[in-house]
Length: 277
Image 1 (tube, one colour):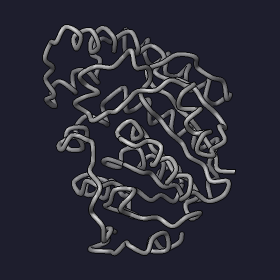
Image 2: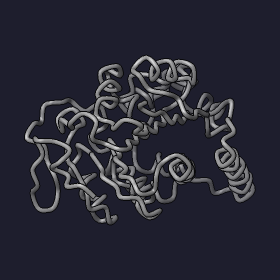
Image 3: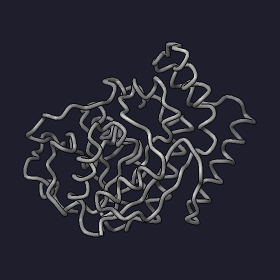
Image 4: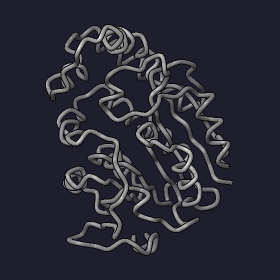
């Protein structure tokens, strides 16, 4: 694997973590977000299934001998699983607390920086993953243009984003989202910036209805939401054995679709694989 410094002239290392000499870009993410989610990720049906989906897609679309960069890696929960599959990985995350948690999870190549401040060189990064990150970026066009420029020719970009504006709720406002997407508009956006769409699908096929009932409607009714760790833990775990068994079968069915390159037509999240040709 190449030295991290070869990807940017503005990175320096301090106690095994890389930092950027710039620190200018505002982050649209809850200040305590990484601390809260680090306590629920390993037990959350949502995080576990999203990880399984991402891993399956990466194994199908990414050369196992190439390097995988995750931009906005949070606590390293996703990347630690990708690393376990044998990939060389680099994580970029602006929150130092998230970086330190990722370090404890065994991720060695860590850059504490915003993507813009890291100033990666053009045509240098083989593969990029942005998992529920794009919705936090105010200027999505500039961000995607920068990602495209940073990727090598034939490099891959894997994206997950929340689906459907009709599911907008106070949760989106709290989490620093600027938008939700559908397959059509995110595909057009990527093509506009030079990407070729290799694969696209929804996932979390059964979640739009409960999201609408439990989050969108209360937002419409102006019912205040509690954003404590306990609230997130309750929403991300299911105690009912029958319901959890049913959900597990649905998630297994979704994974089987991804293994066969089939598409899911409806869901709470979107997955896109794009390439720079």
